[in-house]
Length: 512
Image (cartoon, rainbow, N blue to C red):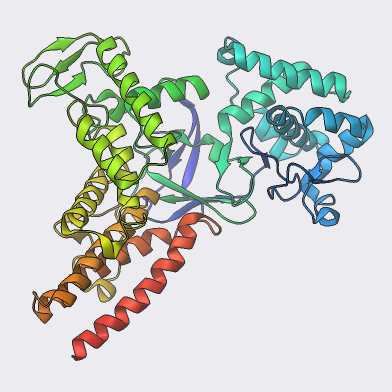
């Protein structure tokens, strides 16, 4: 059953996917294998057959073409995915492979283009026809010098060094654009992999998406409804990090996807009330300082309390300084104390929910309870409360940016499915699931502390453990959608083990 229609003539989007009927939350809408996949430009040295990381000093090599292979070379050099480039490089001579290894990023691009070109051997292939019709933004890309330089290198290698026959330069330019504009980076325990999908390439961007993506082994993609989607709605993913500021999201989309996002979130100075772009007013102690027109990078910024106005370069210069400080913090492998100090100092100029503050808060939530000297049993009540408060704030922000509700059976929760300590926890989200796990840890630790101190009665202690269980169940419900081999999938196994132990403890506590 198909849950979508392809619309070819949208005046703003061109081709896009529309919900054919109402789509219930968590429903799988699309599941497809990639047209092509390969090592991404950013990947380190890895096997061209299975993408396993390699020893740079002494990698094995394909006996035919000379490209790097893992120790399982017999199997990987015969891997069907490797045959397209293997045939061409073998014909050109192994010396070419050694030369290409001097620039891994270009080599990875070249291999992916070759794998796409191999699809045209069957001119009637639906895969090749799909690739030929994909958007490549040739006009916009032709005006970007570093893109032109990179594409020029790829053309020279394919047409001159490898003497590729029957391929026009324009075709290579188009395919490079198709890969840049339409491909997805896949989570992989090995080298960084990117893949191109036939139907998923039509999925439009939205800064508050209604779809959630995950991947299976073999690099198949699964797209689920992140919330209930009414008939006639556009299906959307986000091409950016949901916790970037409006300026950063729009700049990234313009530079890489060649369009300016004008969605509801981008057009709202407060970012739907999340304030991820908001600064503290430099003129008064209570005001929020926001751009008057977020869709105009030159727009003045003004305070919602005292109405002070400053030019856009005030915000740009301030954020540049803060980002430089953040870079220094990140390069120093910060401990919890350094992260807390950063938040305290920069709370004078940044809204507590500003993207930079959220980034450091997220790091601090994961450090508290896991850093030497700050393990869960070591945390003071103040530190536990800080971890809880930061986690809850992350969840509140995520609820607005990643909508939808993960529902659990009443027989499992035995309470309101959507409430944890008074506010809704909703939507399928990796950040939400991992934050919920951290919230579970601190809630459980507080219950343990109560039990050991003897300062609380039995009912309060059992209730505290039950609240921790609620958070853990919500975490597990979201992690169920994660890809095997991903860090989140590993966390799912840990969370399930924790749940068994917690249920056994609660069952014994009820008896006593």
